[in-house]
Image (cartoon, rainbow over all chains, first blue to last red; front, side, top):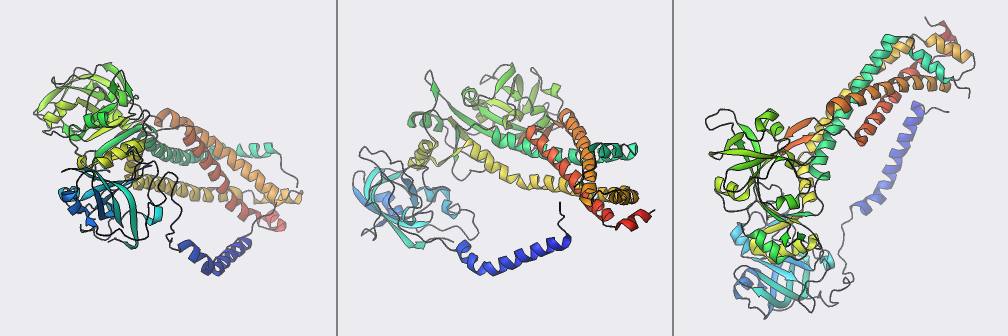
Length: 187
Length: 388
């Protein structure tokens, strides 16, 4: 049995430090690289043409859509993903958008997607639910988060049909979703 | 390599009985402290995370995800949830949906008393017993609405820092400007509910002048969490958010991470102090045996063999100390109640904690002997033989 002498221990530590210093320039870009958004394949069950490369024309902001939307009519609505601390539904093709004219949380906010700085009544009046449904009108079982760069605070333009519209809620069955990956509205 | 016989180490321990007892007690103290720290962390985790029901989902106000006491949702939410979401567990037509109000108040023994006791109140209906199967009524009965009756948890006395007899069935508490009679006691071992006082939901709403709920707790049957989440996002007007009960209490746990870290740091500092003091003691003990080490080397035993014998001695002593600490922990510490802001939890000394304590004892036994032994064994044989 051999002892690891103090000198051997120092030698090992020195070698480790030199190795890290040498390899760091090569490792750092891999570790700290920003993730780029790639338009990957659409999840099974979702329409293949769900995400579009260009925004549908003549969008209406969410706040205005809440006042003018009519059930059963087609609509093009523009907003940003947010309004709740978790705007994406768990395991279903559904997310919540709010009017992009709402004030974004100040810098340092832990979760800007919840728009906690906006008065509750004002926020509620500027929210809409976007869902992708099957032929029976039931939301599909596939989360949309991360698809085509879709994430909290993403600006989106959604074309579809108004499933429900009253004083309390606006629900849109989406047929096409455009995600503006150039812009992520953040504080 | 020739190794010294094992009984050589054992007999050496008995050379100085007083030193052996002190070494064992010191080891027991350090390991005992580590066990207490581990029991504290384990008890808190058990209460807030492990004991939560994985099939329960809490619906509370959006924006109040971190505190049930701050949450306010419409009173009719329970009915909407029961009727609007399929797959919620039910039996004989009764859905496992529990509307609740959570309030922290100060209670008094009677109207004009000066003493104030911090109390966690939960306004519930009969469905709470369906949603929380861990709750068992151990004495009396469930309180009836409209009669100012309450039911107390088995650790509620610890929460209020009063004797257990003060909360016997038949006695009363004063809060929200009226007297409430205790008609039952329940147990919910290992959960935060164990330290609560349960009140009929409508009575608590009237007493606290509110017509809202804090939350609705739902037990899943065929439905998944995603179905509940879907409901909250389709009914944005209700301003609800759904979170699994386990996840809610896990997020609450995060608030107590600094407390847990402080407990561990304190235990570590005391263990370190014990270890450093042990170095001194061990060096003094070994210094007196340098000639013995020189003699053993001249007889043909290598330094590693002598080191191994010394490590055996140290591990035997620390193992004895660990055993003493473990026994004391099981007898005196296991089940002790600790009060914190959310309620009360019990210190848990289970197999995980004991294994952790044993590992700590072994580590102390190993680390505590190597540096002083190495210093004493470094001397060349002639110098060692000449040592006084």
